[in-house]
Image 1 (cartoon, helix red, strand yellow):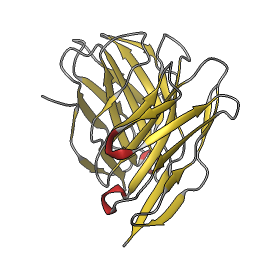
Image 2 (spheres, chains in turn orange, yellow):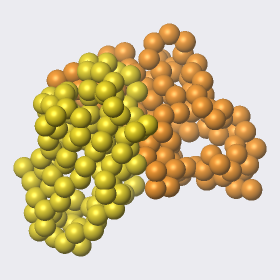
Image 3 (cartoon, chains in turn orange, purple):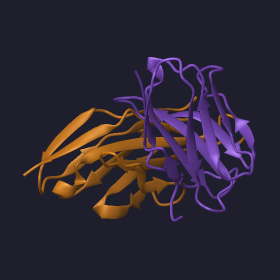
Image 4 (tube, one colour):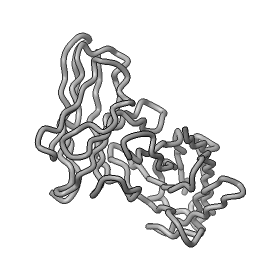
Length: 116
Length: 115
């Protein structure tokens, strides 16, 4: 079974500072990797995804992530944090565990706080 | 509608009662998922539908949980004899097609509280 580990359940940055949210995964097959964001009382919104090809993936709201196979990592970054980035972020890997389900296996999430 | 919708947005019930949670996927999406998100955790897979049939229900925690999708669009998650441990946010997601690993589109969730 695949798994996802997000280091740091809570990350706090100042407005304008670099955002780095860490994600490591385990997978027995080439992974499809996703970052989702969840604002309070809202559903999950896709930030970006890696499927195949270019390992540096750009997403919405200035976020990007780099797939590093040798490190089994898919860390999320943003050069300059904005107050509106405050939310919970989930890393996920797509896995076929039966019936071609390609279900998502999520990490526990990282709560990002942005201080003025 | 434009996105996945779920009703109700909040449900409070008493221990032992029966509840139904509804999901309306994006029109035309054949793949539908239910996930459960407990406090402080990421969503966990419950069940996957391809069309009308449950292709994988391995994530359902026990036989009190059941889900249907009789016409291949709307799905209902049913929980019998609710327990306090069932309290969580139940998320529905849909995807355009079966067998692909493309993006899943999530609804806003139903927050279930069992007193």
